[in-house]
Image (cartoon, rainbow, N blue to C red; front, side, top):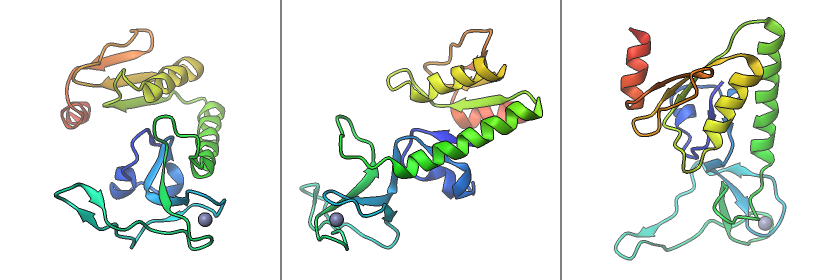
Length: 168
Ligand SMILES: [Zn+2]
């Protein structure tokens, strides 16, 4: 089950089922109201015209409920207005997955790709799960590959190269 701090929807694009992805910082493909509590909704079909010379949005989507500006449902720095309900629901699915792994008695292999030390949310979860579930982390990262050898192995390379080496 993919866990990602990216907000670009690449796991959906790669074919993973929507209900098997945990996007801990939200998704740019979903909108929320900047004012009212209308439920998060898909941004599909909504275009934001941009003046590319000035890098300014010329028009913003509006909330269909109250008319205020809608915003991406992504967690930004210092963001106290993010609606985490969609990510919270995904988190529950992750918990179900973890419980299934625990009850099966199988060992978990965590393939962590491109999770740097600057915002270490993903790295911390990988290590926490490896400790808690006696799992093993394969950390693929060209700059920040080191990992405690009791938890896993680091591959100092890009994601595509690392995956291709695992598949060999
Ligand atoms: Zn609204």
